[in-house]
Each structure stands twice: as structure tokens, then as C-alpha cells.
Length: 200
Length: 235
Image 1 (tube, rainbow over the protein chains, first blue to last red):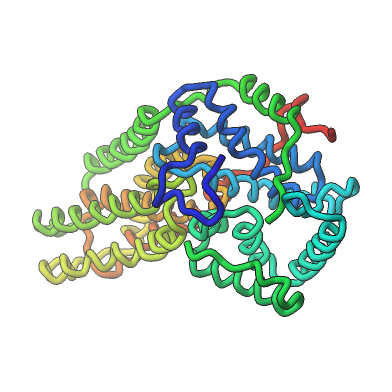
Image 2: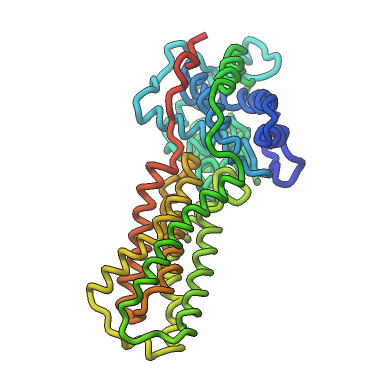
């Protein structure tokens, strides 16, 4: 799996997916499965949240992985795969929006942010209501603020990686995420207290 | 924190099978990247050589020190622009956006600024008279000399930028323009301020604009449909 949420692989040991990608770039065909196993769950979660459509999310994961496969010989040793993969996914997603391929809302009710762990029925219901409320608030903030917030909070990217994916600076990402957070805190009060922007 | 949303197992098989089915790309690794670059620069060199045989139109020859100084300065700028704007550094997404903005926006100004000390060191070169014809020839020559490097850079960065391809394209254009100027300075005999601005700096600006289009058309990583028969289906 990739690095822990909020950690920066630049200061720690290299992520497994980066090592696997280097092996793949060097000609180890079997390493692509390891790259897929490390990336696909994160990409799928991200794309499912964005598209709210399982088939479309699967299609986009497939396209992202094939783009990575096609670019394997251009892979730069020492480069990070996760921001690259997210940037490709995001580009494919935006292109999909532009070409009108994306359904606005799920016809299959695919996405719900379900809390991890063994939650009680009450807790589950509460969490679902909170998730729906968060979704409503995020729909009111600007797309750039929402994107920054989601990459940091939902996808667990570091500030550096999110900045790379969005093609901007760390300061800009932090500011955008903070504004989204302020909007959430204004609407949800204490319930939004869990969302803090990481420092890296 | 939310629970992970896992992709279906069938998707894994589809992706791995699709990757296996895809043919090998026609270019592999660093050796080919060098070959692409070499081809681009050989084309530029051939054009420069042909133009050099034809000779300069300038009536008063420049001092050798003036030519070599300008060559050295513009060559250095071309190398720096290529390093900062074309090379991706340690990231698959390229160097930071601000670097590419600087390369695209500052390269023409830096070329002009680099010419100033040379002009002050050899003030007699400011007095030559170049007309519109010389300006137009130099615009065409600079762009022709930059075409090889620009094509090479665009090939190197083809379908590689999912974030800001236009900006990358503009940086490629500016860097190629700097190479065009660096080659052209050996040929062109005019150094009057108006000629430098119109005949040598303006083409770099034009190439930066051309780069914007190339970025969108060539450098951008656009979505495409999955290969027939392997498109994801609703599970």
C-alpha cells in the first residue's frame, strides 16, 4: 500500500508502489500487478466518490492504469507514482465531464461514505446523515476548494502530492482546503472538528 | 475516515489482461530519448550549416568576441530553459508550475537582457542598419532553427502532462526558441537593437505561443476509450 495518510514519502522510506513501478519500468512485467494492487483501491475510491457510478469509476481506473502501463518506459527512477496516478485519473475525469460522459448522480446509488470499524446502527445512521450534510456543504464551495479538500481529507494525499495533482503550490492547496473546511465548520459546527489540513 | 471502497476483483483481471494485450511502445528508455533529441538538433544544425554557407547579409562584420560572447550567453540560457522547462526533474508531472511559467515568460526577456552587456561592450555593433527584409529573414530563420528542437521536445513530452499541458508546451516553445536564437547568432550579422528585438526575440515569443497549441494537442494526456472488449462493465 501507499504511505500512511498525511505522511510525506519524500522524507521517509520509498513507498512500495514506487519501488514496484521502478521494477515495472525496468522490464519486470509481473510488477504491474503490484502497482495495480497498490493504486487501484485508492483510485477506485476517489473515482467512485467523484463519479458516483461504479461502471464509470471502473472504466476510469482501467484507463488510468493503462496510461501508467503505456508510460512505463518514461518512468523516472525516484519519482512518486501516487500523485502521478491521481493526476491522470483527475484528467480523465475532467475530460469525461467535458465530453458529457458522466452522469450527475448515481443511478445505482453506488457511493456512501461508510465509517470504518464496527459502528452501531445509530452511529451508522448518524454518520450517514453527517456524510450527506458534508456533501451538501461541499457542493456549495468552489470546485478548486472542493478538490483540494477531497484530495487531502478523503484520499489522504500529503500537501505536496495534492499540490502536484492540482498543478499548484502547497500554500494554495492549504488555503483552498482551509476555505472548504471553514465552510464546513460554519455549516456543521463541532461535527466538522475532525477536518484539519495537514502540515506537509 | 471512511472505509476503503474496493474495486471488484474482475477489474484487476481486465486491467492486467488489457496491459498484456497492448503492444510494446515503439520507443523505449533513455537511449531513445537521446536519439529523439539528437535528431531534432541535427536538423537544426543542418539548417544552420546551410544558412552559414549562404553567408550573412550584414555589410559590416561583427567582432569575433561579440559573436562568441552572445553565443555563449544565449547558449547558456537555452540550456537553462531546457533544464527547467523541458526536463521533468524527479517528478512524473514535471517541474513545478512556477518554473515553467518563468521559462515561458522570462526566456525572451532574458535573451534580450543577455544581449545588452554585449551591446555595451561593442557599441559599434549598435549602429548597423538592418531593414524589414533582414528582420523577416531572421524571424523565419530563428523559427526554422527552433523547429527541430521543438519537435524533439514535443516528442519527448508527448501525452505526458495531465495537469498543465499548455504551460508545459509554452515552456517547450520558449526553450526551443532559445536554441534557435543560439544557433542563429552564429549566422546573423546584425546586432542593431531593433533587429535583435524583432528578428531574434519576437520569434521566441511566437514559438512560446506555438508551444501553447502544441501543449494542448501533443503534450496533454487526454482521456481515450478503453480498448474494444475490455471496457469496464457494470458488475
